[in-house]
Length: 158
Image (cartoon, rainbow, N blue to C red):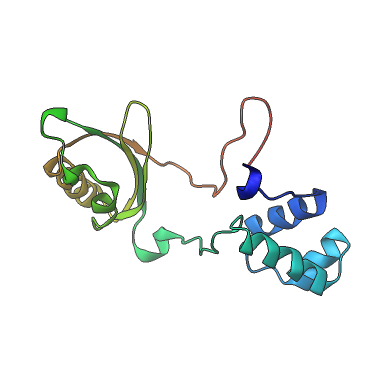
């Protein structure tokens, strides 16, 4: 049953933390930080990639530099379950211009969309598209994007 799991030691965890901070950090630099040679770091990273633990490497984009200074997190809830259709699929939400990311979630809403647009006018247009797909929305404007997840209540971080 544990075929899907990978065992990590403290060094692996430190390597992951460095890669999460900056995925482009050179193996040599990571090796200096964790006390390993560059080939040893590469071997560990490849093992984690092959196991599926490291799924991808992404660019963290500053959308303000693209003229999209307004960020919002939009909670999407299906208006009526009487006519539930494929329109309520997160893949359709992701295709809407202005949607940066979207997640299917459980709880009070069906989807959360991360939206980056130039102005309130464009945000209103995105919200209208969500409504046309059959979603009621609750919108939270992002005041500051630190790029980090908030600390958990027990004091843990990322």
